[in-house]
Length: 236
Image (cartoon, rainbow, N blue to C red):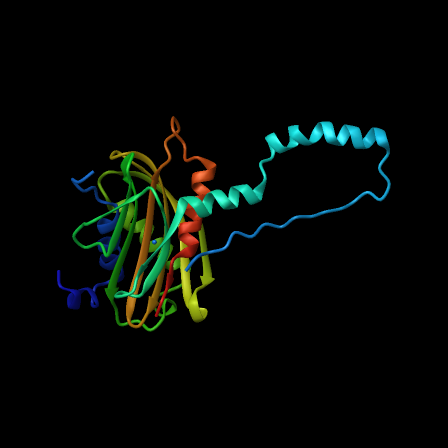
């Protein structure tokens, strides 16, 4: 399908093409979003020696149970790297260990080296829209994404978890979605998606990660993937 014809696709067909490009398997095996950490310090002006000793003894235990959030933020920074496509005009963070691969129809695709079905895909196509709001509300777009997933023969169940909207560069409308899909191909998957329109082009991000009961998505990895989601933005 030519790029010209993509600009006249119906909403259902358009999102079918986007999701199919980002989620279908292939044969072969990077604007930075900040992490906000809020500390609340309340000092006791008069600590007894006994209380002070108890606090000192308790500190190592608390440090083990509740990891330092600053160290966690630094870990994310180490694991993520910036990727910018200056030609198409978008940027995002990607896991530094994931490999960029080529796939027909995908503008950019990154795969988990340990499991190729875990991937981050970006598709860019021309449209006749000025803003994403011209296409519909975040809930409207989420419903379209879900309709596409449910039409797949392999889909057993699909459920939207969250729908959100944020501002990108220059106040750009960015829609974000999280949904869960149970499929006969790969089991349960957690999917994070984002979309925006800039310069008569629609940008679509799809982050797919396995989330099966026997091997659920790790909370730390989930936070890292959310950072990728929130970092997706225009450079135009």
